[in-house]
Length: 440
Ligand code: HEC
Ligand code: HEC
Image (cartoon, rainbow, N blue to C red; front, side, top):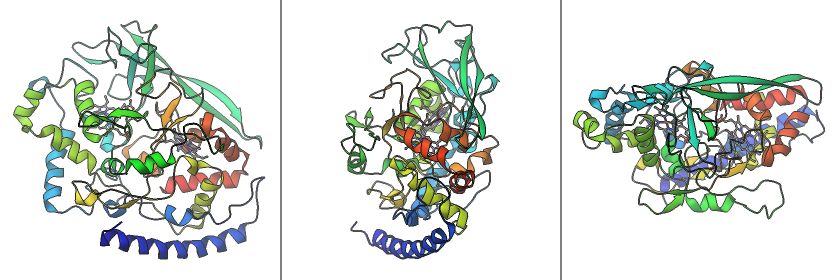
């Protein structure tokens, strides 16, 4: 914390914090208890919840391009590089510029619609959308299909179909709900003996900031043996860094990739089956690095309605029921990296980037890196309230949740007590938590 910019942000923080504390006090005293849980006392984290999540990279744009703008604080040279990387990111590849015979989509945007989530899945996944990971029981790739079913192109393995199984449930107060889980089948290929995992494409923004969180900060939150006995453990995923040495995993639903460069290379290799020589002929030798640079420096959308009393009350409940045990609400200060706009920034991605066991309901039985079938990376929640701006809305690793509420109801395992606390709230207080999430 030696840089003056960060110091200024810190003092801004303190002032904002004080104002929010006073505001929250007033609000919460007025509300009175509404459930078996005590009404949230002034969670010290609450003021930070209302800051700009992506530091000075943050954009206030909340329309369909909310996930597609460059980090606001970047200077001209970096913006030019961002624009260079945007070209291959947005390009629909063809066999002439390197698209593989079998592939899942013809470009990044095919799945990350406007940098948001993939469409569907509903019925046939004929168009690009979620992908099906495959493997043997120990997580190693299938000898026949590799690590992912290729469902498009001349050499496609087979056609992926997703159907949904509905399971009704009720809140303690009698309110009914229904949750759906996917039933996957593949036409034209026998995958019955393999472990499979359906994966929706997550949104792509703020990646460079997540990359710049110090590994010591992550390690400090890990509690693999739950020594503090709070029922929430959390451990670092083991992945490989860009220099080939072991590094903490950060990206992908099981945090299986250590860096945005590795994630981008994986996308070109596996989703597109790209021929790098052909692609370089068209986009230049640096196209991989440029695409990764672009992906690192997409701006994070700002929290909206921060002065809305319901948003503030929802933020306090979010902490109170235990969501923040994983969706960490204290900000991080990013380390100094090669891009100034990503360095020394105060950010609140609402994640500890650790693996947590979320129980059998969400488990896929396909181990990845150090993650078991039931472990998932705490999903970052910044920008989650804008999910629908790209034209569709679904949540969780396979897109099974049709709403934020359903996403919460699927939490189990280490998150069971937080989910139960949510379910035990009076309906208006549950709605406050959803209101807070929709403002992120
Ligand atoms: C066929 C669909 C598809 C295409 C095409 C695709 N992705 Fe993805 N992307 C995914 C899926 C699915 C995941 C989650 C993977 C997982 O966890 O197993 C993902 C994850 C990511 C992530 C990690 C995000 C996070 O929060 O963890 C980044 C970054 C990313 N993709 C960038 C790219 C780039 C860059 C391209 C183009 C070169 C691309 N993707 C092309 C489907 C796709
Ligand atoms: C024990 C850690 C833990 C706790 C506690 C927890 N979560 Fe999560 N949360 C996760 C993980 C891990 C995922 C990703 C699961 C998946 O995709 O299968 C997730 C996913 C989500 C998602 C969907 C994100 C997306 O990108 O689709 C939402 C919304 C969410 N959590 C909200 C909450 C709320 C609200 C609470 C409190 C009631 C809560 N979580 C408590 C770990 C936790």
